[in-house]
Length: 276
Image (cartoon, rainbow, N blue to C red; front, side, top):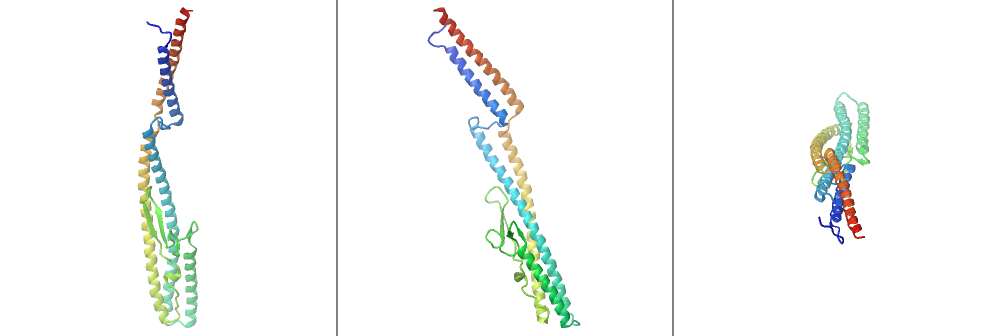
């Protein structure tokens, strides 16, 4: 075996092997401590990029699900309020028909008119005071553009939106005034009430359809979110058993590298002493 004084090739090789083993050891230790196999772009640049994109999709879908749930809450509040208005309109219709009874006198109709006025005010208060997060829902001023149209971001991309329009349910919009003290007023009042009830029914049907659509969107988005999260996990998460075995291997190689480097340096020292 040849010995060299000016160059210690064995030591250089041992040093390189020790450096590589230490890098592998540090990488494995970092993976174990972070629980991620792509915690740094230095280890897997493409894997990290893909995992981050998937993570962004998962987060976006989580927010979309929250948006949809909040919109469902808003819809339920609006529908409950419109149910109250609808009950009032039905009572007003009954009172208007009662006022058409020929055996009633003006005093009787005045009492009925007073109850109708009270119900109209109650309905108007409901329409003007029903709100969600400070936004009026039933007076036609809510929504993104103040026109009663509400837009919900129900998916993780810009195209995944759902629009909900809630008609103005204030009394001025639904029926105006109702005067049952005259025959003409009663006839006009019945037409207005029937039109209002039809409008309320249509709006409540739209609310129900929108709620069902949002619930379906939540189910679909949740399933997609789970699948994407699983795909991210396959890329990002480590197999602790396999990585622990790799750590043990790298640790042994690091120790062997250090021992080999020490032996190579010792051999060079022995050659030098032969000439001293």
